Every structure is written in C-alpha cells, then in structure tokens.
Amino acid sequence: MAIDFTLSTDQKDLQLAARDFAENVLAPVVREADREPDALKAFQLTKPAYIEAYRRGLAFGMLPKEYGGGGVTNIELILAAEEICAVDPGFACTLLVNGLALLPVWYWGSEEQKRRVMGAATSDSSGEWIAGYAASEPPGTPGGTANFDSPAPHPAGIGVTARRDGDSYVLNGRKYWPCNVGGWDGQGANINLVVVRTDPSKGGTEGLSAILVERGAPGVTYNIIDSFGHRLTPNSEIIFEDARIPAENLVEGTYGNGDLLINRNFAWSGPVAGIAAVGVARAAYEAALSWSKTYTAGASHPMIHFQNVGYVLGDVAAKIEACRYFCWKAAHYIDQHGYHGELIGAMNKVFCTELLFDSVYKCMQVVGVNSADKKHMFEKYLREAAIFPIYDGGNFGMQRRRVHGVLASPTFNPRALMDNEFVHFVKDMEMVDTVQRIGGDHLAPA
Image 1: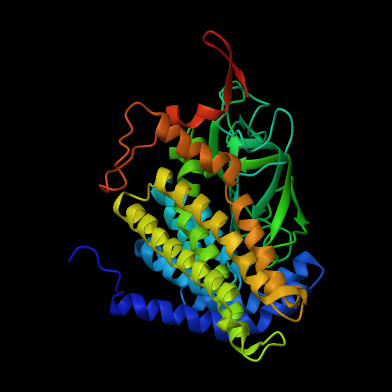
Image 2: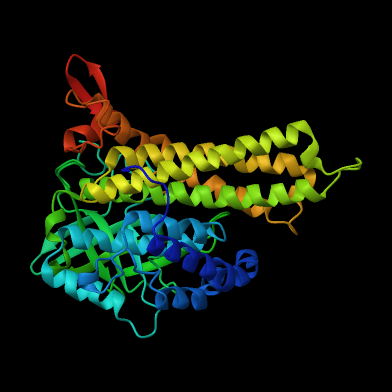
C-alpha cells in the first residue's frame, strides 16, 4: 500500500534516539538556561547538550553523507525534531539553522566550497562547530527583509551591500535577528551564510547573492538580542563596516539568485517549524491532560470528567494529529522534489504554527490560573508558541506571499499537491505582493 503512516524500524529507532537525547540530555539544562537573564549565557548553558547532539549526529544530520553528514531524509529530520522541540524548540532551532546555512552550499556551491565548509562542519573533534544564516535585517523605510524581493533597487529590501573590489567583496550594512551568527562567544560562528546585495542598481529578484563570512573576518561585529521566546537559540545583530570577504567565498550559483535561496530555505524549514509547533503543543497538551486527570478544582472527581474539559482537550489532540501528518506530507514532498517545496512548505508553516498557538492557550485555559505560575511549564510553552508565526519568514508577509505568488500564476494547477506534482517556483511568483498599481501598468514599491 502506497500510503502507510507506520514508521519503519530505522525511523522508529531515530525517533526514540532523539527522544532519549531530548529527555535525558537536553531537558535537565532547559529550565536553568531559560531563566538565565543574560541571553548569551543562556545559550552557552546549552553547549554541553549541543556537543552531545553533535556526537550523536543530530547537529549536521541533514547534510549529505558524501560530505560527512548524516544523510537523513526530511521525513527523518522532522521525526527527530518533534522530540527535541517538545523539550525546547529554541535549542532545536540552533540545529535547524546549521541546515539553513549549509544546505545552500550543497545546492549552489562549488565543489571546493562543499568539501571545505561541509567537511569542516562534520569533522570537528570538539563538537562545537556551528553555522549561522543571515538574511533578516532591521525594519525600516524603504528597507527591511519583508519585501526582500521588491523589484526596486537599493535601498529597498535587503540593505547589506557587497561591492566587488579586486579579489574581495566589501560588505556594509546591518543584519538583525539571524540565528547562530554570533557563535558561542558572541564573536562569530565558525561560518555564516549572508544574503547580500551584490548589485545595488537592481531589485531583489536580480541583485541578491549569498556569501560565506568566516569567523574572525575584519570589520564584522555582533550584538546579542534578548528575546522573550526561543531563548536557547542565539539571535544577533551583525554590523558590517567595510568588511573584506574573499571573492571566492561568494556561493557562485546564488549570484543574482539570493531571492530564490531565501524562498527555498524557508520552504525547507517550513515543515520543521510546523513540527516544532507540534512538539510544543504536544507538551502543553500532555501536561494539561495529566493535570485534568488529577486536579479536582474542588469537585468530587478530576476535571477530565467534566464535559468542556474533555471536549477542549479532544479538539487540541485532533489538531496536533492533523498538523503532524501535514508536516510529514510536506517533508515527504520536499524529499521527492529535489528539496523544493516553496508552496507546500509555506502552507504548512502558516497552518501549523497558527493553529497550534491557539491550542497551547486552550491547554492553559483548561488548567486555569495555575498555568500562569512559573513553577509549571505553561508560561514557557506560551512564549515559545508565540514565536512560531513571526519567525522563519513571518506568516503575515514572506510565507503567505510565496503561497499567493504560486496561486496567482496562470500556470498553477490547484490539484498539484494532491497529485504530488512538482510546483516550479520562479521569480515572477515572488513580487506579487511587493508592488502596488498606481494606475494603468505603472508600478511602485509597496
């Protein structure tokens, strides 16, 4: 039978191995780290767990075996991710960003870059090697990441510029929010993949590229951001001031195609973000169910026997199951279509993260005011769930625009996903929401 939701023996082993890591290695450090007021110190408290994750093949399992990675499929990746996210999605995000930084090197890099960068990532004897992905920038007018694919030239959209000067690119500008980029000490990850504007005279669908910035590059500084959720993954500001980066570090296949890199990356991470929401909602649901089976609220029997409690938790359980299998479908689709899933990845991320944010709050309503007591985990679940719809290409703009762009295409087949048909994502689909019509055919930046 072609459709079978039973995990294979290898898949089940991977799932249980990830659960063992999450519950026995990661969980003991999460509460202390999450409560640490200093954002960098909070992240550093997870370093022993990260080293163990590296040792177990979890840190770079998404990379191909040819370059030292684990070679896991996307289905296998999200099986492991759910278990880790149920304990802490911030830590899981740290692992995910390794993929966001290095998979584009696999897709578009030279053979030398693949062996040099991915080889270093997967052969570190210390287990501390970490990579960052830098696309996001500070909000502004007319700049900012949300309309990265605007057809208007600089300064609209991506604002970090990379000017070719001899055998170097000179970078100037700021990134804001990218994960992992500051590394363990706030002085830089081992390597960062940075989306830059290599041609300021062209718009976001022509002038963007990606370049590898190594730790210690002169003219690059980092400032840690203190966020209310996902505190165990490090978000940073990067400042480039005449930073000279070797021209050979430009990922050749991304030249003029940095926009496609952003869309492909967020497609790949869509089901990972979706399964992260599943993991957090699962943790909240299991905690609320356990509470309702022991707490009486002053009645003669536990709350679970009250009609509304059972109905609410039943609805939450159904939503978790539905989202889990949608994530499996999206990951399977990406596996089958050359790591492309620009449509289904965005749909999956939006649907799961928004539906399950409400589910976490429903679990808190079941528990009542006691869920606000920090001795329980519900306040953390709520903080984590609130991050999902606004990170990883926020749902309001970047994620929904990708869906809109595909649907608006005259060539789109509305049954494509049902029929497992490849949906080819092209540049014309990107700018559907980044321009407004002034009158006639004249366009202006939105």
